[in-house]
Structure formats: structure tokens, C-alpha cells
Image (cartoon, rainbow, N blue to C red; front, side):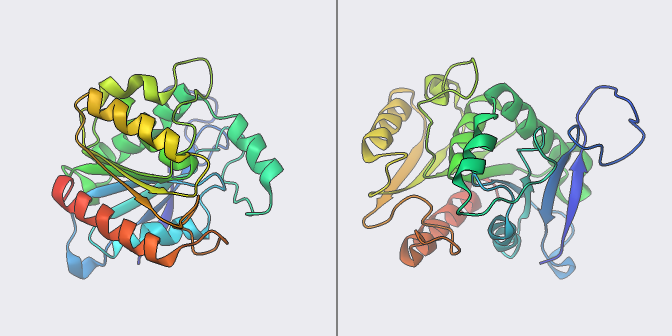
Length: 255
């Protein structure tokens, strides 16, 4: 699918503000969109990266949504540490270092900047609804966004670990569940340890208690990262079913 990289600007003034790509202040974002023959205005999906950054796999996920009629954008959420790192699946110490620097208030700011870009600045998505989907730590960030970012119409969480744990000084996303006003989908692996089946049960019960419309599914034999075809944990059957479910979910609530 056609694609490009955009630097999303944050509000406020700073030195050299007339220049684009000021590292550490702008957020590199991969943008994939449908072919021109499909039209010129589309609903949008924000794709939240795995812990490894906006890798080739996350670009392919964006392209997959673009092939189904959405503009898909994937912001590089480690931009405060590095403009756009792409970490290897065997680089866990480095991954932990980057994840350890994430803060929930800053992540909310990042998602709000992406929403503003889609709603107010990018003509292909002007006036359209916006959904969000995230994988791994991105699933957690997607849940956080559902609690704290106005302008979203639906959220799909893939095996979001640490929803019960804060990043920074604020409350964990699970404690903000009553703020959610949009439908939430969850796709989980039954052999996953983060989130474990017990964690998924807690999240499910919190959503039910808050009256949030949600649809959770756990896949037997699937573990963490089952959607990524470049990881040993890839489970083709679970990945295909979860994408079909998520696509139908977005067709109902976003498209």
C-alpha cells in the first residue's frame, strides 16, 4: 500500500521551531493509506507498536488495515529516548530499557497528538472516525488511550500486559476503566503470562462492572505475541481469527 513517514508536531514553541524533524520533540509516524482508486477520504486506525518499536512487522500491520479501507498510522512512541528505534526480538535488555522510560502522561499526550493529526490536519481522514489497536505493550497503551484520549471510537487490545501496573507516578490503566466510553475488544493467548489468564479475568470483570461494552477472546495454545509472524510465538490460526474479529469490530464502530 502507499505509505510515508510523517513527523507529528507537539504544541508549544521551541528553538528552531520552523524546522521539521527536530529530534526528541517531534514524533515520527508511519502512515499507510488505501489506493487512490478507493477514494480520498477514509476512517483511521492508530496502530500502537509492540515493545520493539515501529518495526517492519508493525508497518505491515498498518498496510494490512490500509488494504481494508483505513488510513493506518503507527507513531514511534520511544521518541523521547530515540527518534525511531527498531529493536530486535533478541534485544530484551535494550527493550526493557526503552519500556522503562515510558510514562503514562506522556503516552496520553502522544496519542492525543496522533488523534489531532488525523482529525484536523490530514485531509484523507478529515471528518472520519478513529479507532485504535495495539500489540504487546501497545495493547496496554491502547487500553490507557481508551480511558484518557477523547476522539476515539473503538479500541482493540492484543495481549496488553501491565494494564494493572502504572508507568510513572499516576494510577494504572485498570484503575481508570470507569472513564471508558467506547467499545473495547480484547484478543489474548491462553498460555500468555503477561497478561496471564488471571489478569485477563480481572480486566474483563472491571469492564463489566463499569458497564463498558467489550468482547474478549482467549486463544488455546497461543502465547504472547501470537500476531507477529516474525516471532517464534506466532500462531497463524489465532492471528487470522483475531484480525478478522478486529476488522469486523472496526467496521461496526469506526467505518
